[in-house]
Length: 139
Image (tube, rainbow, N blue to C red):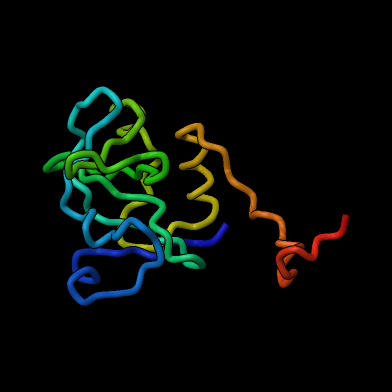
């Protein structure tokens, strides 16, 4: 697992290339709701995978004087302009607090995966058919 970089409002206004269907610049400032439709807060930052540039985590500002809570962007979804997180508010608010504005270490990322009960995906096996022409498969 690789560390993540932070995409903040400042980065969003200066641009940047992201290789994904989810544009993190459009996530910042959106409201976030839990699995019951209860408002959690507002997306403060989006964390991208260093290797792929794919947005993987969001930091949700949970209140005026409270901290940011990390939530996974997969399996969350955008519905009617808001982020719908398929977890209960209590679980989200109890997520490990690593502070925001810096890289997440692989250990911190693993803690978040475990907290949410998500499987840690192993890298896909190498494509052994790379370069093979269509129709030339061995019978």
